Length: 48
Image 1: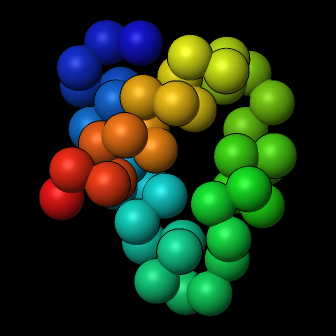
Image 2 (image 1 turned 180 degrees about the horizontal axis):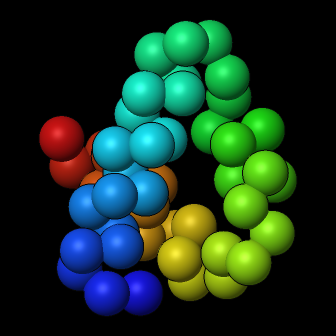
C-alpha cells in the first residue's frame, strides 16, 4: 500500500472508530484490503 493510501485509510478508520464502529467492522467493509494492509493500518493507528 502506498504511503498516501495508508494515510487516507488511517484517517477513515480513525473517523469511523470515533463514530463507534470497531476496527474489525471497518476492516470487513473493505474486502480489497489485504492482511498486510490491515496490519499496517492497525500499526499506524497505534503509533498515533
